[in-house]
Image (tube, rainbow, N blue to C red; front, side, top):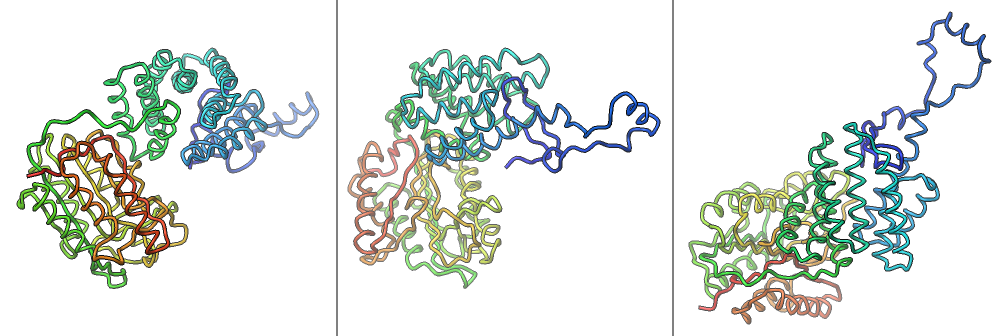
Amino acid sequence: MPNCSSTTVPPACGAPTTTAPSSLCRQPWKTNRCSVSQKTRKRRDKIRPAQAPRRPPKALSLAAPLVDLVYYYLAEISLARRDFAGAKAILEEARKKTGPTGSAHLERSLALTYVLLKERRAQEQIKNARQALTRCLSKTDSTDQGAITRALLLESLGIVEALAGNYALAADKLTEAHAGLSVSPLKMGNKLEAGQALLWRSYCRYKSGNQEGADKDRQAALEHIDEANHFAYLTRNLDQIFAVQNRPLPTENAPRNRFAVVIGLSNFRDEKIPRLRYSGKDAGDVANFLQAEAGFAESNIKLLLDDAATRRTILDTISDWLPARAGAGDIVFIFISSHGTPTYGEIGALNSVVTYDTNLGDLELFSTSLPMQKLLREVRAKLKKQRTFIVLDTCYAGGLGAPDGATSANIDPDLIVNSNLQLLLSSSETNERSWESKRYPNSVFTRQLIEALRGNLRYQDFHDIFASVRKNVQDEVASDRNSKQTPAMAGKWTGQGLARDK
């Protein structure tokens, strides 16, 4: 949510990007009578009759952009949630309020929304947006603020040209926009806009046949994912627009070594945290499978159970133990089975793993657990050249005392994966819980995963066998629990080489 005391406003046509004074947000303008001497006031009143003070022109010029700002971000949130109809309603309402001189960026967002909804008027709206953005570009000045405005407008124009199918032209516009945004003094906001320009350019390059450039742009853009989770959702929308499939990379060379960190928590130091019957056993079964059947050396497997799986120990293992052993091209397998926390927007908390030393309590649950974003940030920083296969058998299953407003029971893999060398599996979708089996002493997901790997040790692409894992989990949970559990996966890496037939 933008801070009213310093709000960067997407430029309206004819109005440059600007910072709105806090007084505009908090109170109406008032005449400062104390600043005018009595003598001057008498002389002024002789010239013109007393009248109600007029609002300064600057306040009028900011009114439309401030309205645009609210609608712009509301629409962006709806688009990220794939609520295209909701985004359309917001943008069309904004049009009514701001009129034809409203923000050209809103016109761009409306064009994007119409394309996603496959509406007939999409092409007409693309033309409208192009005209509005071109008109605004002609009015930018040579000041530093004007340069930022120009870069933002070029980004939007590049997006519009991409929607029109003019990929080479779009890539040129986005390249110029990225250059301007990268040197902007408004650090974070325009840094993320620069990342978004790269993400759009990656699709333009892909459609133009420049696969290497497309992969490089995508990787660079998604490095901002910690600050801009909506990038992950944006890729889904762009995949749909540009008909891009989740294509695995070409067959990799055989890895030299395999390493694993396997974590399972059935018991917790805080006795108020509900015990999990099979998490410890799940971790033990996974470790045994990796050693006995998948070709992992015993010395290359780090098994952390219960009191050995503290927040600090898990982070140290990911940050120090693995990087000291695994080299470029090696396989790294990370398995975690425990409780998970929900997301909680009030304090900006995303999903976390409940560790042995997590404390139960309103906000302590979030402050003492291990955030998935932090864990995966360590993976990205310390295991850049390793092929990383991550499995999360965690979810928020209730009983943890999370405060009102907590949502999303499980992690969304698309929010995490941003590398062509990563593959991440989650035991269920974000709004589902993960179940322990009634048929055997394991979680449903972990047992089905082991069985799928056991029956396909020579697989070339894990994407091909994940469908059976998902179906088997769905069928068992529907039959035994009368509920839904849908394992999720993200990542382009094939996962090849995890299991080795000896």
